[in-house]
Amino acid sequence: MTVLNNRRSRKELREKLALEPFRRATYSFYRYGRVENPSAWRDDLYRRWERLGILGRVYVAKEGINAQLSVPEQHLKTFLSDLQSDAFLAGLRLNRALEDDGKSFFALHIKERPALVADGLEPESIDFSRVGPRLDAESFHRAMETPGTVILDMRNAYESEIGRFENALRLHAHTFSEALPEALQVLENQRQSGPLGQVLLYCTGGIRCEKASAFLRGQGIEDVAQLDGGIIQYVRDVRARGMDNRFRGRNFVFDARMTERISQEVLAVCSQCGDAWDEPGNCAYDPCHRLFLQCPNCREKWDGCCQEACRISLNG
Image (cartoon, rainbow, N blue to C red):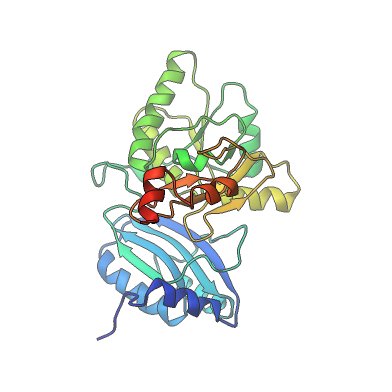
């Protein structure tokens, strides 16, 4: 019987990846739509992509697919043909990573989930026919300059802390399920203080804004648009067209790279000393593993730990 999951240790996977004599490229994509049998589709995708040496993290659900993949460059054409041969995946757009050495994933993980992005809502409660219009970089810039426009960052607080659009409102949420009601409350507060202009949503690659725009419109905030393809596509577009980049700092990504540098401004500070620093990492004490900002000096002083209790536990 074919094993449809990775069984190797992380150490083995890292060593194998380091020895590969070819290049890889990191891509992400998503699509909402009705999937009748996500479990069977999950197994089919695993068989197809594992044969091509593809690594990555993929979630499938009755509402669609959300994928981040590391594709061997010699198999890219075959992979693209594979996508086109799948009725659900044909014609979707791939987002290529901005800073990419191909070492973004170490194994292929495809998991069935109740929702592509955990939203805390009842299944089937989002009406995707009400998704907000998608704006390209140029249209997004024009909308940003319109008086009364509200720019809302739909990402988690630890993402927007290290990078964001100029004049964007940030959320305090640490999960998407927290972000949706907080976004609604932020906009209601804005509306109480005066007329609410167009609401512009943005996120990393677009998947959260797709659902958030439909949610907000379903709650009576109708003039909601979203940045097409998220920050990743935006940066590609402004660089290709020679446009002014209005995203500052780093873009948080959910793979081994963790961030991509978008502009040279450092917006965040080390959580321990307060010096300017915007490269996140995890606490060296594995039972904690907290994600936080720690500059090199504090990393040495605290042995990579987020607090004294972790440092003591780490050193026995």
